[in-house]
Length: 171
Image (spheres, rainbow, N blue to C red):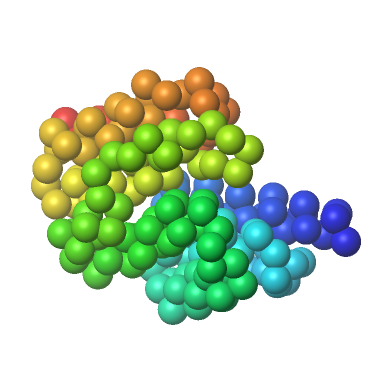
């Protein structure tokens, strides 16, 4: 039903937000609740991302592969969700250059404002990669991009977290 799918989506949002603030036990619980409510919906995009942030590589990749099999020509899935999850997996493995190769350089689609878009995800991941790589200057550019475009999603958790990451980049 629509209510179950909406509730699952909200659990997925919560899982992602908790992962961004590095509360992985709570993120995993919200992700599990999302999948329990609606195991075959678009909420899997959010859950895969949350799990990738928290290092649950096998489950994140499995969900991503399910989505790609179901919707192989989905533009947002292929240009945003897939590279985000794949880059996070490489980041967690310590393969920073591979992760950067996946997300590439900034592309205008990343900051699109459509209803399905998540404009801050890829710049945030790219910033994290640079930060882990020890390149604070490039990391700060990516996190600042989020702040510069904060009007796209003014209530997004990425905005305050990007501010925190900028401080880490200059630290």
